[in-house]
Image (cartoon, rainbow, N blue to C red):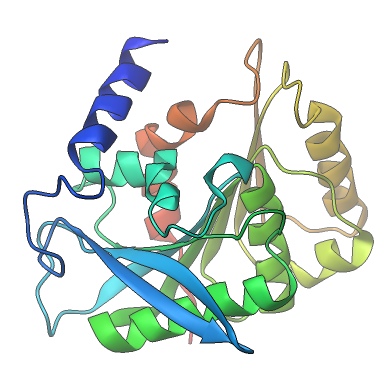
Length: 245
């Protein structure tokens, strides 16, 4: 385990459920939430940045976790690496963070997708989110979900950050025209082969989509999330994007 990863793990442990120094709902804390979609209750969290104040307008990041954070207890999704990076470098990520939890055995589609999108809408209304600056970030199965969310509602998202993505079909690629997307993949990934992202990139080229960036990390495997989220160029790029309307 590298030094950066150890710092992130320690940071997450100090802010794990039941150990938060601040009362729920205060700046610098996670707020536990639930939503019911078609009779099923789902859990999510909203992270309020340290300088959050009611009445201000904040960017919003919808962060979709990987398979290991699936569950129903409502807290495991807080351990994804983007949440750690946001807390470690609040000056780089001045945003509300929406952290839905995908149930066991499910993925980011169907009712689960509808729940996650409703969580964003609710956060925008409750905490003063900026609809021109709503961003999507996903890792592993969350990356697949993020790309498909953006293809389903391209007018809703200012930019998409995708880490270890699987390839999609041509329809998805065509609907992503004009949506800034930055894909990352390690070329030694054993869980999601790098050929998936390469194939995805070729589809973008085939339809003339120039809004995509791709970074391939030599010698690295599936767990590149710290490398991505702690790169200051990533947060700088993300917040430079915004919807025109």
